[in-house]
Amino acid sequence: MVYNRTGYAPWSLTRAAGVQSATVDGTIEVPQYIQPTLDTGFVDERGNWKGIKSSDEEFGIRQVDSAIPNGSAILTPSTNPDGTWPLDMTGYSDIAIAILTTEAGNYGVEAVMGPQDTTFANLRPLNPASTLQGSVSDVDSSAGLIALFTTSSEAMAADVWNIFMIGCRLRNQKALQFKITNSSGSEAATIETAFMRIV
Image 1 (tube, rainbow, N blue to C red):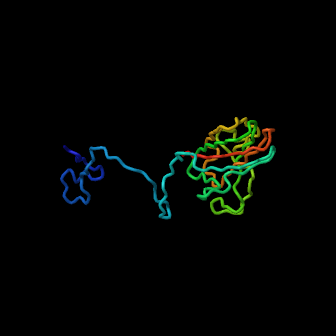
Image 2 (cartoon, helix red, strand yellow):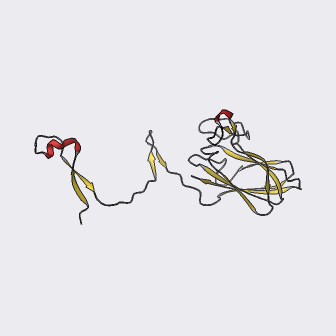
Image 3 (cartoon, helix red, strand yellow):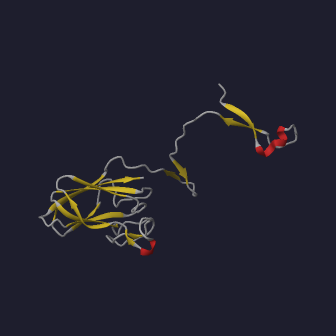
């Protein structure tokens, strides 16, 4: 079976015509078969290897906050054993946030800046828990900067995972936390949160 065929190189047709003094060969080999390849990353302009991000397969970052009174808020994620706080969305486009609460009712959910003692790339200190502002393609640009994600009264059922997909608005945010406010009107609630980032 023939895997390669010979073709004329367009830059040296004179060599193919028989001129022996040509400095470049007049033929090139053209592969005639399919070969699988893997793309796992690239080398940046400084010579550093950068791997390609892949979506989280599961909700891997979880936090439990107990006895949160009505009208009070939590910041999540705050501390995790694997050091995955605040959320780093570098290379990710979408995020799914899952919230399980022991009290049904309305809850506020807002994307905010991470803690003061962390960094946004090489910048610190940060303005902790401040509303993330920006411009997004699905909003009229004449509106200027807007809150990237905020809802003051999202209805949630109790004792089940309430899962919300946030597309594109928080992509590449390097120091991301969520402020969740118990506005259920009920007694204190235990709030569990989990996150999954999607390329």
